[in-house]
Image (cartoon, rainbow, N blue to C red; front, side, top):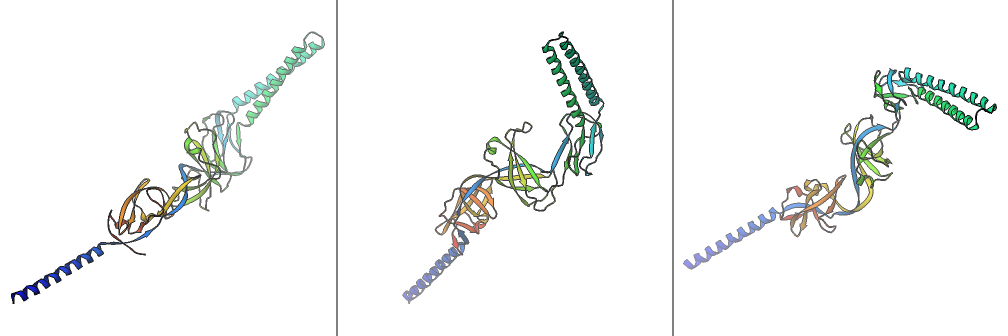
Length: 344
């Protein structure tokens, strides 16, 4: 009897142990996280250069006086429409007119001296060299008059084209230096550009025709396409940088000169890179991030070097090979060494 009870008890124990092992196996299966995996794609990645600047209209004309002096009258206001040839501003002409009169008096004296020397030469009193010197002095005096009259004319600013006064840089009663912009005139063109300052190591990578993307603080999230249209051949002494001009596609948006712009220029130099979905990336920090690589029934957390974001994909330059599989969906719920179950 005891022997029979022992057999029954042993059978019950084996059944219980088997049940526990089965539940343990089922729990292990349940612990496996369901994920989707992908294989990275290989592309040619073009390096990019970033910079910032201020938006300006290609039709903007900076108007200045050729001579310096006191601004006597400013005939226009900001936002005012002006016609071609309209007088916009004028310097105090007292000193400038006096210079013209002085030059004219000098010309009259040089003319009298030349006539006098010619008569003396005819009487064989003066030499041919004296006549030549007097002729030279007369020609110099004549050029001085023409220069003074030219400066007198450019001591007033006239509108070279019809347009709108965008900005008054100087005001009536101020002293202004020669060639310093006093007014900015907009002729109504819809074409805009951005001048960005680049370092010497970046400017040599940029070429005319390179594509660029521009964002404006005025339109958050909006990307404007642009093209490099001009590259400076000398450094800007005020900033110590080399300027690259980008011609912007306005996309029909209302743009105003002075908008702050951030640009990313795509250069011609390229290198091989892999691209993976953004959702594969975890713990991103600058150009460093992590991905989960499939290793059998487990995942391995690996650090990679990232590049630019391309739509919904990210460039990977180091840390991953083209034949490896990485988790594309469910990466945010994983940890290093965790078991996974791959689903389509």
